[in-house]
Length: 441
Image 1 (cartoon, rainbow, N blue to C red):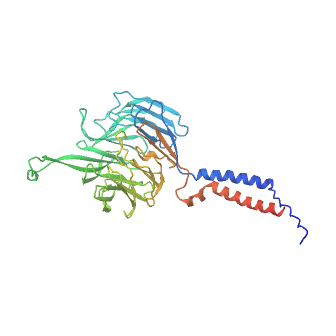
Image 2 (image 1 turned 90 degrees about the vertical axis):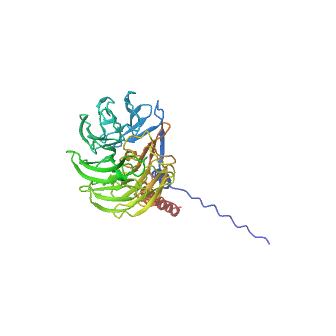
Image 3 (image 1 turned 120 degrees about the horizontal axis):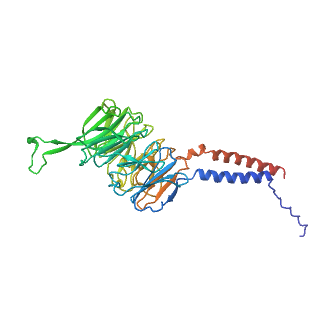
């Protein structure tokens, strides 16, 4: 059977309009922008010239400069964006004492660099005077406005005794000396700067009846915490019975309350009179930190072990809402300056980083957000920049690591990115243009 062959239909050609091609290229560009904004933490590493040995690093309070301190007496200020050197300090060897007791810190107002016992101008890098510390300094803290500097001395020296010293950084004069007969090992200012706290140990002679064995020492060490008025030096609150070496304290952001932990109990006190407002059990917890938004409290061991947990609590009820598990041992570097406590909240209170840990934790429930892939060294509140988008850390080999955050913590945070809405609008316009091209064919 023969028949005529059916003619083949010509293939239907589809032509994209110039409008569709432009929208497609625009969609590709907006998608790449969205991907860059949705990217996780990105790491930037640089090694300062002539840097040898361990490194400590922190951001300035305004986030524009970066302080790096190396164990070979190199202290430098860098531009935090371009990483160009701005100021270089030449520290004489006779000034460079044991780094555990001295260190270097940048004042909150960015005017001074304190390398105990010296003060240096942060703009010119020239020495401005000496704070004659009466003994080795283990605890130190700046006032919030950067005008005062507080030091705590746990050991006596030939030039003086124990105690805490308050210094005026503008004149380099000693303003106050308090707790003169005590081994002061912790100090901190209230957020308003009107009060400061000292935690100290002192020796008490045992009564004869209490000495059971002949080899026992005739004295015992007890602890006391005191709150002082910065302007007058008057003691306002005294807390007895604290453990001198396993007792942590932190003011709430408004300065009205004080959180304390002593290895067994976590307490919230009225900072004006020392009254206990609420308390709960906190076994083996010896440090306490309060988030900048006053919603969360973290307690941890003073010398944590690998695998130990930090307890994340609600600041009102003190109930545990999560745990932060360390992967590495959390001992602070011996080259970290006084006042570096090994835990920091981001300025918005939403993220937490730990000393010697590799994770960024979510402060709402204690879940791990990101793994930075490298242990953080010398963690302190200035490890975050003021916007909370960058983290800085030194390492044992002298390098400085900066992580930049672009991606939101949760997937629904993508709707807050401008590139998301640009991509959605361009995508919708591309679909409309594609349909118009099919109709006009």
